[in-house]
Image (cartoon, rainbow, N blue to C red; front, side):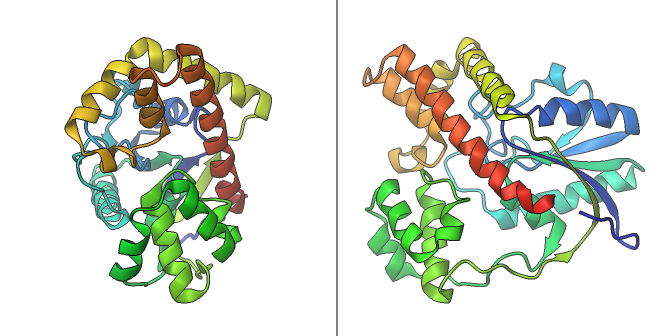
Length: 277
């Protein structure tokens, strides 16, 4: 992406999960006198630490981070809420005379900050939502693939909330449209994209590290805080680990499934970020 010289400047570090974005952002922030805005749709939630690979205070190395640990996992945090948080963070950082650095793997969130008019204006269809509410993620994904194959290639197929919203938009407009995006900032985008073999090794190391750090205990705690329906929306790291806790899969199967689902997620992220090249 080219910079727009008349717009406020921001650096964006994007890429798939386990590509090293967070650590790289901290090193860059230390070097250029910057502060970090997290663009991660689950790191906004309190208590979702290990499963979302949040940096520890030590790993942040004194660099201020914004839009992390600001919401209860019991309730959905919307893109609009993230836009508000990120805008306030941008203003705070620039008033300090520092450089804002947006870092994360949620492309939808990054676009929400960088562009105006980046979302279709389709009101909720309550009748449709009720009819879809009892369907499984697999069933919803099949519906979306028929309605809008292009959106199906980039969406999380295990997230019922996002699937229902995409189906809702496709029903209203025929497909999720590509909207002309008006930049808010002069963004310099740094895209981290390790080779597949390297990324798979990094994913495997992350899975092992999460289990060592206490993913099982964190999953038990989170599962008691939220409803069963809400728990299903918090990510495969938690839903898969709960299956292990319930003795439905073995420890080895847990590791394999976490690695596989993380790799699939990384591929969807990579597909989204190709438009930044």
